[in-house]
Image 1 (cartoon, rainbow, N blue to C red):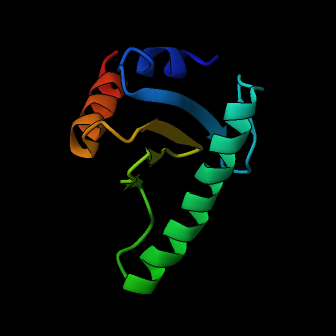
Image 2 (cartoon, rainbow, N blue to C red):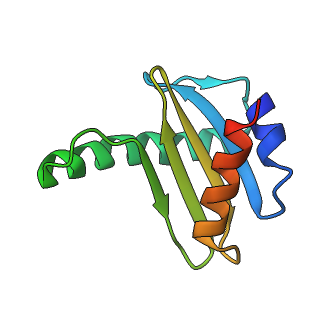
Length: 106
């Protein structure tokens, strides 16, 4: 389990978090959950990139998908993607803010 996953798991609604390279390799996690979340993260990266180009808004940097059962979060850095899944009972805006707060803390 990655350090980021451990930090984000302190948020009660977070189910899983992973870091992956932009070529699709998951860092420090070989679990089935990481494989599934990695596929979702790769999909969001590709789909979001196409959507950003279609709307002329530039490169994708983050996505929050609000679902009734689960929420998905995607964030991009220079060389990695972060994928996060959360329970659908949590507030998307509050979870997004808390994820960013934890990631910004040194």
